[in-house]
Image (tube, rainbow, N blue to C red):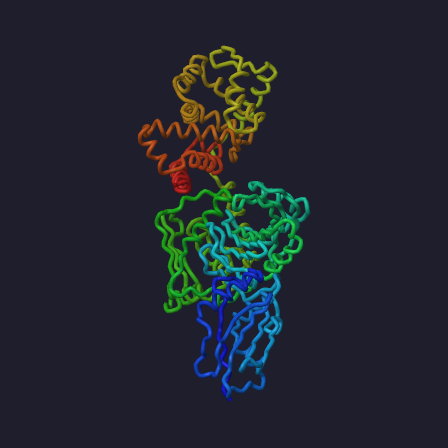
Length: 639
């Protein structure tokens, strides 16, 4: 028996399955195909000639002339269905197109086969999902090991913007689903996040803050979970302009704080059909898997080389976030080596040699350990060694009750720990370090008897309506001077007033009226506000009286300044730069850097990293830190 060989006709390779063709479009494509084939067409070696192709509604009719010795097969429908490719079957099913095959001899019917579209397979639904797609190695995923099932009726496209990892598009129903991953400035664990979202009002506050920069209208929010990670589901309305027309879209976003990243999974739908399409987006989101939490060792192998720069970047970001100021050395050397092969290091997972040397970070990591450790173990190991080199911390004793502590010397204790454990314990280490740093910081010795004398003088001056008596016996109405001083400190106005009052009394007891006038004349005459302040703070007498008064009013803490003050100080800082380098060089700098953003960054960091007394007594290391902060802000705001 001769086998049936069917002529395969592909309507159009450019069509996607999500586009539903009209009856006229089906007919047009069939007619185009028939004109290109030059019918009738003899199919070699089959005894069959294709005579005609046509359509009736959503039915495609294939008409064949067969030779006199042609014999119909026993199971023609089964044989025809088996000969149709999977891609064609899917097309016919989704488009609901039926197939009719007529086999004629001398105008008489020899065989007729009708194949309904549902016999070729089951029509897919919008909620149907296909195989998993992993974005682990995608550069825009920023190291997040995420995979998601591709929705069958959506086309997978590359995201157009820097943080859009992927875009799933369904043109027929005007649906879009986006995966967006942004850097977060610091680590956050699931355990630390939960208390911050313990009530609906806190969830709503988070949602409103998240969409505050968008031109949208808030609808609702609630706390949910995506693969065991807390997520804030936010629904909002957004007007989108497309093809010159505005469309009202409703958007659902699942916002997931993930370690040091912020993941946003968003579905966009026409507002009128959102309730139905919500479950399409929900189904996609529900398929998300964050593989690293399952400690799959296959995800951790890197071979002979690892780029440790992102780990170092993150370490310094965490320090900055915690208010710990450390200058990043220019010499950083972190490498993988086979420590197992040496008798002296076979028992080590890693070691550092930059302890007590702030000019270098020098760390060696055992290659086998790094390639077999979980993600959490890797972070424990590299941050443990960085804490040695950068923070100059020693290992804890083996009998320490907290075996989860970053500085615990046995990495085996971390085998069962998660990234949440690491984040919580690293934050604990930074809190303890900061507390010890504050406790052990060197301060100027304060004469307690002198402080008590000052307090008595302050009370007496208040009773005398802020009249001050100088060393030479001359009285001075100090209230106006005190008020001007208070406004320039950056502190709470009431506390600043008391502090400046103390300073004036202290200076009055050390200076005559003429000396006080001369001091202010030297500082303020002919100087800009910024220059005057700098000169004032650097004066030795001012330093001396300031330290004592700072002690009385407990102002030796971080300086808090308003945004208006920051803007003013930043503006003055730029004026100083322009005066120092000249207008021409300044104009050149403006072509390279966003100087306004740089200056505000620098002022913010300066006030965050220094206390008032530190600003008054800049040591060589503090000056070095100021230079590092300046370089950091310049690099951050480079065009």
